[in-house]
Image (cartoon, rainbow, N blue to C red):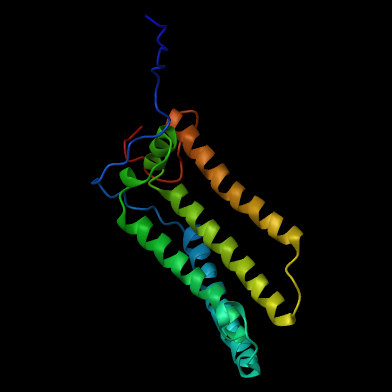
Length: 188
């Protein structure tokens, strides 16, 4: 008989998402309301600018990607941004926290803060993407290429916007820090 490999038995780092769960009300603070309003205002400005740029370029009749008129290219980014915004906002409001796949400690921390950190992450990502999409649209309108340094800073900001709040949620879940901004749902 050959040697059999022993399987490691340990904790799985991720919880298994449940199909049904109790919705956790999101603790909205003035900071989150302000970030949400700024993000929507920036998206409206991006949409207005894209429509302005498209009306300037469409009459030129220059062929762009996929055989469409090149004047419609600035409209792609606002459409993508509105879809991302709607999906993330509806997802946060309608999906219970049990359905999100995240590490166990992070999930526990999200419960303790009333999903405030999850909403913060989504609003930060939304705001950063809107700002960069506006920058790219302005660059397209002016006729220059977006700077690589700006794109690298954007990617680093996206990574930090996810990492830092989730790291703090993990500390909340392990009990290393306490949540003082609202009521702890579990009373701990």
